[in-house]
Amino acid sequence: MDNSYRNFASLMGTVLVLFVTILAAFGLLYSYSTINTYNFILLVLILITVIVTLFYFVSSIAIMYVYRRKKASRIVLCISRTGLRMLFPLVIVLTGLFGGNKDTIKKFYIDFNNLLVDTMDKKYSPDEIMILLPHCLQYSECEYKITNDINNCKRCGRCCIGFIADISAEKKVPAYVVTGGTAARNIVSKKEPKIIISVACERDLSSGIADVGRIPVIGIVNDRPNGPCYNTNVDVDAIRNKLESIINEKE
Figure 1 (cartoon, rainbow, N blue to C red):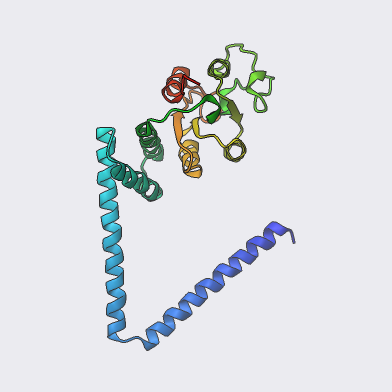
Figure 2: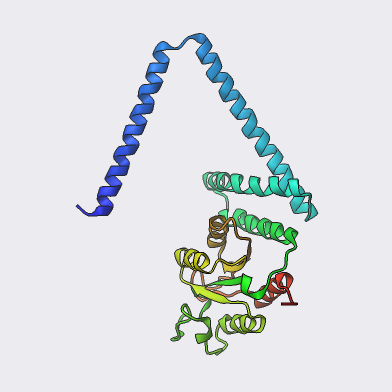
């Protein structure tokens, strides 16, 4: 029996025991409860529902206010940021249940996150910034490996990597090409940037922003004319403009 199967079986057993214990506790509670106990439980459930509803209402208003005004007080920004993180998973689940377009919701999440980063209005030295790129931006038939070093790119012009590498060299901001979410998290953990400019699809960007919540991320959605993860493209000028908006030119 391999370790993965053993761990899975152990976890499932633990969960089963937990549910059985909860059911037993509910059974005992039911057997010895009085009408006052039921009233108390109902009151607690009502209070929880009221609190959740108020949180949803206040957070939604704060998010819409900030999105329309593009600025707000620190308290409103904090409420909208917290609300976005808490409500986003729920909205994604509901979108899936009702057959909606999840990418549209994720795109709003990315745009609103970028807006929150803009409201910080902070400048960073080049070595505090990281440009994070997906490997699918590279021309699929290119023989040069750039995931170890983007400067291995020969600037042939068949993809946008060479142009981004030139911007990276010009601005002295490190750029990394990663093969997936795990590699991205590893490089972020290792380099510990103060802010990230990241290019990816809506799914990877939204999950990446959530993963590195303590680090500001500016997300730029890539173009996928050939489908996902294959010969994708990105607006290089958007990367340059975002970089110039946060870089401290005095450094």
